[in-house]
Length: 253
Image 1 (cartoon, rainbow, N blue to C red):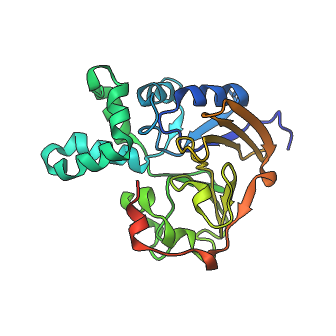
Image 2 (image 1 turned 90 degrees about the vertical axis):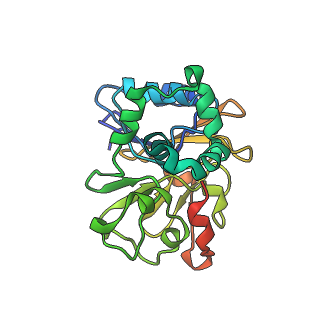
């Protein structure tokens, strides 16, 4: 398909890196015919979460609920019931999000928007979700906890969850998987992970994937680099048989 055609572009975990996102968007140069999708985790860790959220809202881009948005919503809407989790969220990058808002206050319209975010989007041949699914549970029984937080039990699946859809995910930085280098995408059985670790000092890469034309747009927020590559040049295949399943990794933020 011609690169001039209508594009579907999926963007991985931004984590508050607004300047890097702007560089990425300039490289992608979306038109009014293109559809832009964010996989969640717009916030936390990076210095400009408020600006990232405002940009996505103002442009009416579709965005999924990530585990970091879920943590923030739980804290803001459940108040004292979430007291034990506040420190965990702050430790996971929440302090940077607070600092990015004027007087440390998340405006009500942003809270409402976070609450409205879907946990997945079905594009027909492609299915978008932040983290993945519990492979042992039917789709209708999946909770936001599983869709926003799952890791090892999903990555180690031996066959695709959907026989006719590619699942595109974020949440788990790709280089933490066996045989995947910083900046590479990771592909398993029926899934493709595009969270290349924008905030992480070992990586710095933020990825936008044109799934219509199979083109990866990447910027490095730490080194001020950018590149555009055919997707197949930066995909590493993950062997599920060497994936080490641990229950604790499910809750790493």
